[in-house]
Amino acid sequence: MRLGLIDMIGLAATLIFALPVANFGVTRLLAGETVMGATLLVVAVAMVAVPHYFMDPRTILTKLFKGLLPGRVRDTDEQSKQ
Image (cartoon, rainbow, N blue to C red):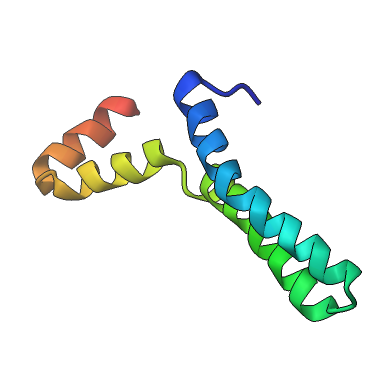
């Protein structure tokens, strides 16, 4: 998967917040608090994976703009694609 410049900056910004959470999760795991450590690791992974794989900004904007268009315009757009 290729990432553009904006995607790389977004990933770096996400990692700035996710890495300390993951680090604290590993520390809790090593301290014997299994549930807390595992939960924090899951949260850290979700912080990176959810925005990257499930909430693509382009898809969200496309759906938003299609919802704002009148029905007649949407129908002609869909017919032109076929």
